Length: 166
Image 1 (cartoon, rainbow, N blue to C red):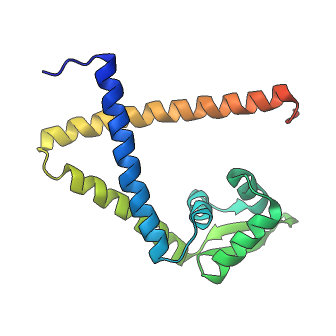
Image 2: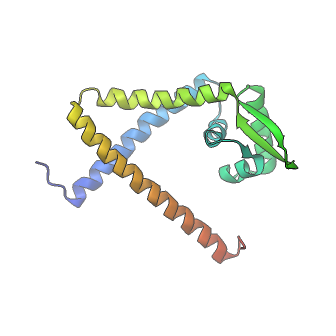
């Protein structure tokens, strides 16, 4: 049995993060190059995966200016990956959503990630896969809690600095 010292756990997590990052980033970059997309364009598609979004919110989410989001969405519109329309209740608000082609593309990205993970786990027994899945589920929960806490701390910091007001 392996002794689970803090140093061992730290090393395992570091190796896991580095390897997953390398595998996923390499695959992602290869896939976006094949599709003639830029990283910011794929980030827009990722945000839109959650549903329709006003361009102002999209710009804030990606931390870019309104003119920059207009240029990005123009390019994605020309590629047929998104649809744009004026919000029914506020004509000043432009809504962006994935097109059917954009949804298929997002599904391809997800499938490629799944293929990488399934390929990596293929040599494990069913019991080992179950343990890995359980551990990864707990890791995902911990990362989600960390993400929420970090976002909350960033907003709180912006309020304290006066950048945001209630």
